[in-house]
Image (cartoon, rainbow, N blue to C red; front, top):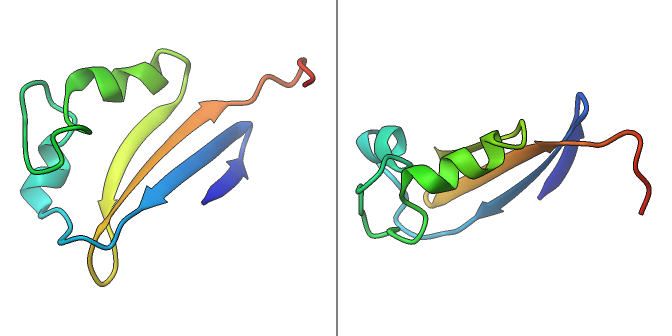
Length: 80
């Protein structure tokens, strides 16, 4: 999933696994937190987008699974 919003572009990935409970959602990007989704855990992963003015977060999927999303600012002056 991709979406533009207010000078930002966003991207998301959703799975259909067992999902994340509320406690995991609050801690998933903290350093040294290692749930079954250890590859996504860690403070570095959440600070990488923020160092460019963006954001990384996770939400619970419906009816199960998890959704990981991030946003990054769009450079209005550049062209591809």
